[in-house]
Image 1 (tube, one colour):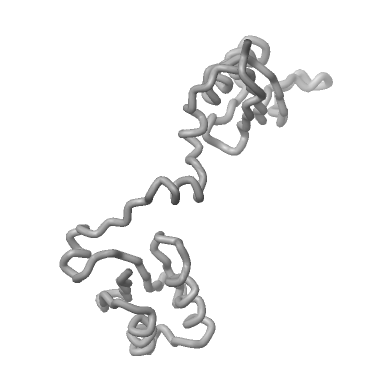
Image 2 (cartoon, rainbow, N blue to C red):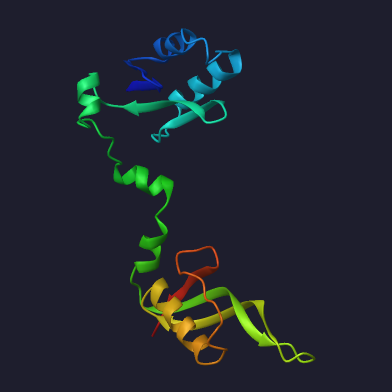
Length: 180
């Protein structure tokens, strides 16, 4: 595993963490200290493959990227992209869209937090109220469960009510079991 480091126009591709730390120590503006050195070593030792950005001062950063590229030219041409194996995908969890679209016909329980339009009795004006709604339904997937719940709500609440995205934090679902 090689490391690509960049600070403005200074960049380097190194083969180990000691070379990376000596490169960073050679740049006076970075101000290498034991805490920063420990953090860089922890990042390199971790299983994380996302680039790491370190803040030097407001709007000034340096970055470290783990790469399989043997040379700077290969890195620049993106010839050594890291691909995730199926076992790594299982460890990191499935993306929201994969869970939503996974088709298993059965009973689902869906929870929606939405903004419902209600009339204030004393004034006759309307206002938004946070509303929590839970329903159990037969569906083919998480997105089908979401669509059924939203369709049900649209028929029963004011049309100005605001419903969340299925991909957001205001919709949750769980599979209860297969239908017979």
